[in-house]
Length: 394
Image 1 (tube, rainbow, N blue to C red):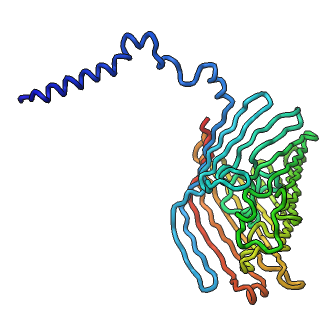
Image 2 (cartoon, rainbow, N blue to C red; image 1 turned 90 degrees about the vertical axis):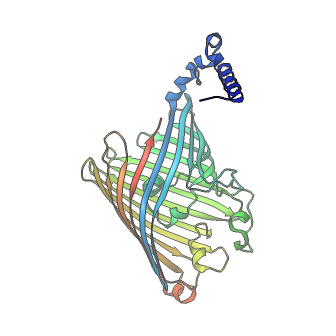
């Protein structure tokens, strides 16, 4: 086969360029070759021993139905329910940092704390003494109860308060280990991540004003009794989302556990001079934020380990909403929930759980709400099958 003169010249140029690019890898590279040095210097590699990287996943196949009034719909879909990357580590003998990015949340920068909602954690802890610790940055509020203590990855559906509560906010906190079995915490936090007008817009009531500082105060006590068989997680908080009007929130959490069985019960009470959860605002439906609202909840969860690989759990919950509807008749709605779940963990050395669950939610309105607020009772039923994987990458 004949090769043209132009082709021959082209091939010679390619060979010349290739040799020129490869030249540093021969003799000259032995004198000053950056590839001989690791990207991370050897003296810095030790720092990686103090870094933890986690990647949490929950994905499932959902089959659901909705029935309420004249409405009915159903569907089946795969859903990435929870995906989060966490990084934490020790920077100093007394300083640690914590960061968590939840990819299932919006990344728009919030007008008050200047972080996206997807950044759930971004704070440092400073060990002031053996018993006292200081926290600074965006963190989870020290609310009590065991429903709140679970990672969102482990809760298929929250009760109404924590479905709508703002759990991650910016501020400062301290924890104090007063006794070996008793820990106390206190925080001063922003009560919101957004300015009020950005949050509610035209729905704000006429008599509502932005406070100088939308602040929340949270106190927490965690107790441990009978060698850990019985535990408590109590909290009380006050926050003023608007000027001179606020929210009083109390949680009493209890837990009993032995080798195979764990029982948890939470009682939650929230009195809100201006509705922060949005449930009553949605029920009233007059394009104004509801006022003088109360939420009362019960949450129960039982877990039983049948074997090393199989665990069953049952969650039961109720939530009642009260608003300023009419004299002596302010009950608006009660919701009920039941979530039986089975976990199967086939692997010994890695925590990957496959689950099968049913989620039933039922919403019953008071007679006054049914007659006057254009609402109707409804229920949601859902089956899920999927996996939960809290992966420890480093």
